[in-house]
Amino acid sequence: MRLVVVDPHPVPSSHTESLQVLYTAAGLARYGEVHLIASKGMEGDVGGYYGVSLPQTLHIEFAPSLNIRRGPFRLSWNLPFFAASLLKIMAIGGVDGILVRNLKLANFLLHFERVLPPIVFEVHEVFALSYREEVKRKGLPDPGGKGKRIERMERRVYSRAKGLVYISRPLSEMVQEIYGIKGPSAIAHDGVDLEWFGMDRAPSRKGPERYILYLGSLHHWKGVDVLIRAMVHLRGRDVVCLIVGGEGEQIERYRSLAMELGVEGCVRFEGFVPPYRRFEYLRMADICVLPLRNQSIARYFTSPIKLFEYMASQRPVVASDLPTTREVITSGVNGLLVPPEDPEALAGAISLLLENPDLGRRLAGQAASDVRRYTWDERARRIVALMEGIRG
Image (cartoon, rainbow, N blue to C red; front, side):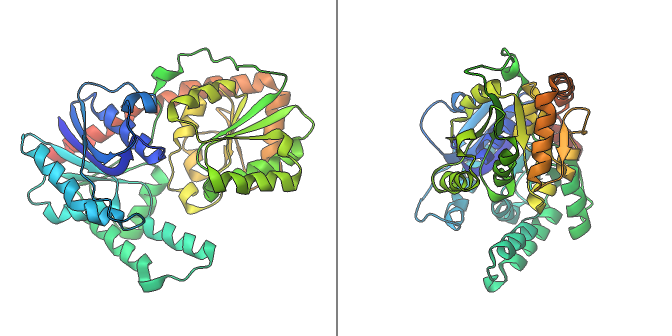
C-alpha cells in the first residue's frame, strides 16, 4: 500500500500535533510506502528530534511556503502548495489513499476528490463545539457567525471523505450524533513507541524528594492549575511537582499561582524540552499526573500521548475521570481516576500512592501490560485496515 499523509504543521517543531503526525506516518510506513507532506520546521535530524526511528519507507516532503502573513489565515495562502506537492507524488503513480487531519486542508482537497485517491479524514475534535466553548469561556462575541461557518465545513468534510479515523470512541459517538455520519470509519487512538521504554525504569534519584510529574502543554484545559492547587495539600512531604512543558507567559502565570498559594518551593517549572528529552523526566518520576479539566476537548476530543507514555514508563498514573481517560484507565486496576477540577481529590490519590508503594507498583505493572494495545503500530494497523476496506 502506498499512502500520502498531508499536514501543514512544521516538522520538526515543538507542536505536539507535529509529533503525532510524524509517529502516525512512521507507523503507517511499516505497512507500505508513505509520503509525508508537511511544512518545513527546524533544521536537523527529524527522527532524532522526536526520539523516533524512521523507517526507510517513509519519505518526508516539505511543501513550499509563502509566509506572507502569520496568524490564523496563514494556511489559506499555502493550500495550493500542498496540493502541488501532492500532485507531484501522484505523478509517480500508485497512490492508494490520502490521510489528512487539518479541517481546512481536507475541505480544500475535497474540491478535487474526483481526480484524487480516496481521502480519509482524521477527526480530532468537533471544531465548531470547541470554538463556541472557547468563545463563551473568554466572554467574546462570535463575529460573523464563525461557529456556523466551521460547522458547515465540518459537515462537508465528514460527509464527503471516503472514511473517518476517530482518536476516541466518545468522539466517534458525538460526530455521529451531531452530523449523522454513518460511513466507513475506524477508532484509532494515539499511541506510544514501546522501543523507547526498554530503559532502566527505576527512578533516577537526585535526593530524598519524591517527584510528581506533569509532562505536556500548559493549555487551560490541561488542568495544570488544579495540580498546583493540589500541592497545597501535599506540603511538608518532601514532594516536588515537576511541570515539564510550556514557555514564557504561560509559565509565569502558573508560577504566580504557585507563589500566591505558597507552594513555589515544591513546584518546579522545567519549561519546554525537546521531545527526545521527555524520557529523562519519565525516568525521574515517581507518580505521573494527567489533571484534565471537565471541558469537551478533554472529555471527548483527546487521546493523550503522554498518558500512554506514562503507562509505558511503569509509573503509577493519576488522571481525571473523564470519558476519554476511562477508555484507557480503570481506576484501581491500572491507575487511579479522580473527579476533574478537584485539587483535594487529586492530592488524596497522590497521597495514597506515596503511602502505598506496593499499590503503585501493582497499578504501574498492569498499565505497562495494558498499554501494548495502544502503540503507533496498532494505530497504523487500524488505519490501513480502513483504507483497504475503502479500496475494496
